[in-house]
Image (cartoon, rainbow, N blue to C red; front, side, top):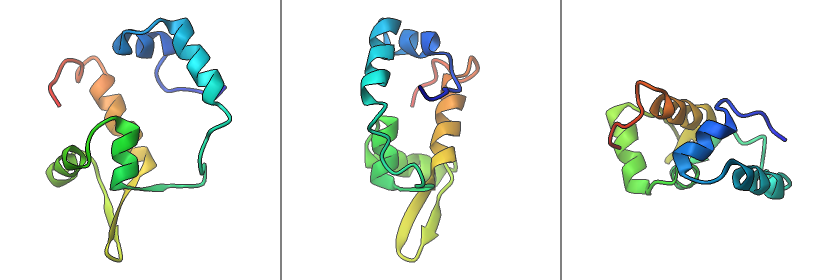
Length: 99
């Protein structure tokens, strides 16, 4: 099972689901990793991972909360930027702030 930067108990509590159910879901999906070499996500991919719409993600990008890079005519969001943003939002300081 992959290591998570947040304890599963905390994630389960934030999602309001039983921890056992969350562990079962992770175990069931462990074979569906996608392209693990992918380091730059499209805006749509990053938005899907975060559970927000593309428009919301573009707002975060425009405000500088999430860094991105233009590659030709395409915009890419680093995988680490998505993880860092979510970790900041789930930290005690960021908990409860409106998106």
